[in-house]
Each structure stands twice: as C-alpha cells, then as structure tokens.
Image (tube, rainbow, N blue to C red; front, side, top):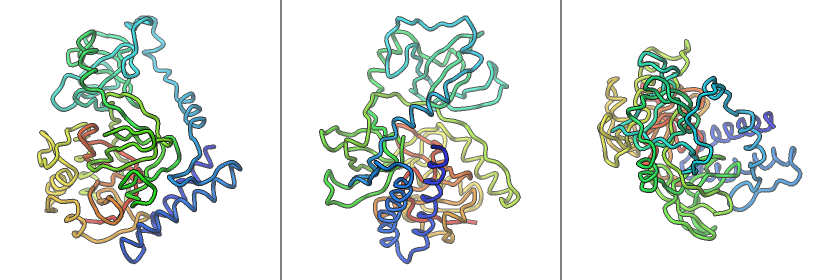
Length: 370
C-alpha cells in the first residue's frame, strides 16, 4: 500500500512538472485534468483490478487505507499511559471530543512538548479551536487536536458547559475528501468548468449541502464537489503542526530565514483584504508582507504577484518560491513553498495561516522572487 501511494505521488509530481512546462495556462489546466487523472488511473489499474476513474475523480474509496493509517498512528504518548486522567467516559461527544476544550485567545496558543514556557513548540492552537483535554499538570493541560499532541496553558482554555455552548456557535460542517482525487467544479453539474483537483483527506468548509452536489469553500473561493466523494461532519478548528524546515546547502541564508519567518505566523488569522501579520491577512497580503521583510515588494493581489520574479517548474522549487493556484487558468490564491513538498499560506477564515501539501490542489504556476 505504501509503495502504491509513493508511486501515485511521483506520478502527480511528474504531471505537475509537465503542466508547468506547457505553452500556456489554458494548456496547463487541460493537461492537469487529463494527464493527472490518466496517470493515476494507469497506476491504480496495475494494483487494484476493481478501480476505475469516475467522472468526478477516482472512484476508489480510501476508507480502508485511511483506517489502517489511523490504527498505525494510534497515540501512545506518555500522558495516555499515566493512570491519572480527567476524562469522563460517560461524557457526551461534541465534535469528536469527549472532554472538550476551546482556545480562548485572540490569535493562537502555543502547544509545547512539555509543561513549561521554555519547552519546545510543537504546534499552534488557533483562536476558537477545539481540543481533547487528556490530563492536567500544574496549570497545564495535555491536549490532542488534529495531528498535534502537547501541553497548553490551562488558563487559556475554556472547558465544561461554557465550552459546550460555545461549540454550538463555532462548529461548522466540513466535507472531507474520501477518494484519491476529486474535481472541484464551477457549478453543480458535470458539464461546467473544472476549477481544480483536490486530493484525499483535504477538509473543505461546506457552504450549502445538497443531495448530489455540495457547495464548498476552497481557500477563499467557492466551488462544487460531488457528494459521493466527500464525508460530512461537524467540526471545530484544529491545531496545526509547527514545523521548521530543514536547512540545505542549496538554500541561501535569506531564503531559509524567510521561510522560518513565514512559519512563525502559522495559526494567525485570515482576514479578507487584510495586510496585518498580527491582526489578519489574506493570501496575497501574507506573501506581500513576508516578502517585504526581505526586500521584495509585491502588489496586494495574487494575480498581480504572479507577474513578478521568474518562472520555475515544480521540479525546481526551492524554499521561498511562490506557488499560485486558482480556477482553471485564473489565479486567485498564492502560497510560499517551504520545502519537503509543503507550503505555508493564509488559507481561509476557518483555518487561518497554515501549512499544507504543496499539491493539495492544482498549481497554475510557480515564481522565484530572488
């Protein structure tokens, strides 16, 4: 199973490279729609005889694989091995949490490896994000949220009935992609434009539910996904992993520093039209402000920023490069590549500034600013 997913990843990267070397943006979008799906179909045919490409994406359910991954990643942290716990087994479940805590901060709360202000930061818990409180230790809670486990200051966490009431106001319906890839369309039908391709396990905020089509928000734009390729659930915002990029000889000190600076804002707020790294930014406001710190001055527009620097392919990407996304051939989102196939970007009002897979959706182009 692992080798199959590695092979799929390689095919996807190869397809992206081919797209970015194409002669025009329109040709690029067409190549992605045909090339990526065809390549994935060929690989799946070799490994799963029953697999086939459906009209809205690969109709191969990834639930079995997902269950196996979750089982292998079962948390065995030292806190769960301790006998003392504040969890109540009879307490009701709210948005997946049995002992709910909600971050009561204006921006984000640091999650640390140990219970102490000097301990290593392992994640960020955004404002109004939910968490599972596992235990309390000297004014600190050991929590789990999303893919992050660690310690947070207890006095910044809302608990009990107050948290339950607040969760009812904060929770949103989320559509989680349950196939290897799925098309996001401009309208709720198969005859309209394909805006982009999204990969498995991507979480999309639901704007409106329908029996056959779900209207969703992808970053800061809307689209439609076929209902059979997503699972719906009520969710609170989750913690985000705090990851420092590896330093390599090929990356200059300034680019390495730029990436670390961008990552320091993970968990920050997304505000449409915003340009403040502390009070809220949108996607282009984020890249504009980060680049300005290193002497690169860009307009407050993702489409406008795509006209600066020089073009690079996905195979040439280096930390500090910008990746542009959008609907078909129209650019509407921008992110900073941080290495290891990941980006940091101001995604949307639900997630804020976060780290994502660089190919969570179809890139249109990549630019190197210095």
